Image (cartoon, rainbow, N blue to C red):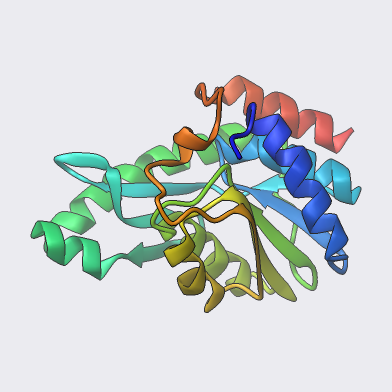
Length: 211
């Protein structure tokens, strides 16, 4: 099944998450693309929407391939398997991670002006993105929410490759995925409209969710 766009995917995902009846939920979307999806999930649950800023650390000569991720709160995830396969050492990873962290801080200050952070302590934090590829960004988000005292951490995405779900399942308390293809290709292949989400759209949705 292909989704028309992120909002349709979010509405379908929201119904699936609501059926699981999470206790005292907080939707934590990964910007940018996860925010339109997360907005619909939050509306389905009748709960707040927050963002957790995570940046993929891409392989220098293949930036779409994640060799890890960095997240607010100093969380770092390194995908050793990818790094070894392309010959990346720790020093080069750290150089690329520093670049992504600088961008992360810029995004974070922008989003927090519109929507101050919501404390996940004692709540079921539901990490939402528009899809999952290697899972590095999701793992970083899960680590941050655990450190902040979330009572439970779920992951909910419209689409993810079947072989990545068990890896995420070892870290998340529950994983909800609508489509689990064995031949994955890319997240965008599962949407008819996968045009980029802008910062202004993220800010609009955050403001709407707070009112």
